[in-house]
Image (cartoon, rainbow, N blue to C red; front, side, top):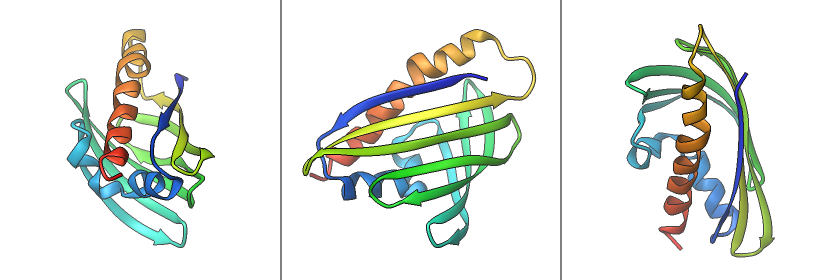
Length: 143
């Protein structure tokens, strides 16, 4: 099962960064692969969200249960998908100072069927760093 983890520094406070990470419906406006996001259910800090994205010319639809721990962490697990067997991951926010956060993204993913190693390599080598950079730019845009 492919795993990826990456950490970056973001020049905003934890509250602002958490807001950007948890504003799922806005993802399509700054993540070009993301086509549509719909919140299906909200129970306190737990949300069920449906994502549609186009990845390597394949439409991937998945529903995640996300658990939000305000200003510290968002974790998720897969409920259902057309292409994925499993997805577990998290955003973790550390605050070394008031106006700077260290953001870590961790993902463990299982894909249905046989997938060439190059696909998982491209996900972790190219897509993950680019995605993190988009989140960083989005958060820092409103400083």
